[in-house]
Length: 118
Image 1 (spheres, rainbow, N blue to C red):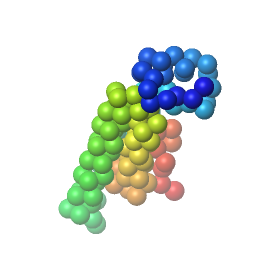
Image 2 (image 1 turned 45 degrees about the vertical axis):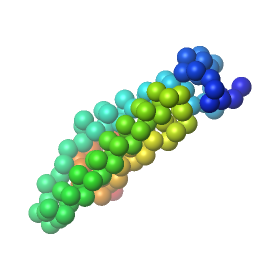
Image 3 (image 1 turned 60 degrees about the vertical axis):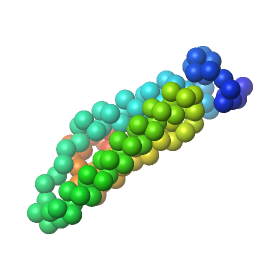
């Protein structure tokens, strides 16, 4: 059974109970919203003397993009567009991952929440 745009949020949530991995569900989007929120809470800025204000500006921009995509994900989920919601929350998390990977945020060694630098 495919999930159509005309289905209500509760109908989509009911589909999730079959345990399959081929559908985007409310529970799946909520799981990744929570994962991204936990990652954002855990990550802390890394003070650098090399990049100074430029690094702070870059990090602020990356965090704004994370917040914007997370807000988009919540909006899409509320309107029943779970595919776009899932895509948006993954983009949000990717901004955090990128900031950790390039050394603007410290992921505190958590390889479950972040892609850590080598």
